[in-house]
Length: 296
Image (cartoon, rainbow, N blue to C red):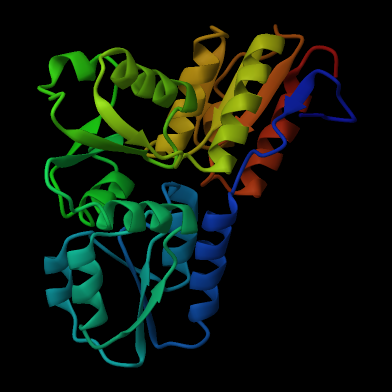
């Protein structure tokens, strides 16, 4: 955790902002603009409106994440399609590789690891459990690599509502950005109810670090600013963690949202950001906070 050297009232999470996977995806996409006539991204590369707008303004064409979106174009070797960091289904991957364009797969290595885990589970009486958001593209992608029955669990309470069997073996994985504490509760619930299961620790380290830092900020600051896109799953979880400990927690997308907040009554403000938030936006937030805090 870093305290801003010019203003000790501002604490900034050390791991706030782009994770290595998002950094690679974005940088790689920009580099492809120099080599290909057209650069397509299948679905949004990352859940941050500012990043997507910048990519589009530089010529990147965003396709809706459904295979029918490809019917609008004819592709050849002068085109390139970027597979986003969230990953896609096996069906989508095979389709895209046959479409005629070059393909650059920037799926996060942590997500690819989950694809490999679930793809190899094909025994009788075995089921895959994904702890995560069923509507998130990463989870949808993981489901698309499963050969065996699969279901998604979002809350520990879901286990008591679902129809599980003591005769089955359950293989548990999690969305890489899932709440680490909640994942442990889900696994413990399987254990206390006596089900047969094997668990895989698939929450990425960057997520764990951000969540731990956010918890510390929320316990030591009078207010917490969480920065990220409105559709960012990992940012939403940071907000939930902070809000559970600090009532004065605010979820913003950029400094335009920050300028509407009344921060001048707080003596300390913590700042954290999701894995898809550019460092430039975080720096702008720090500067804005410095201007309004009382003891600056």
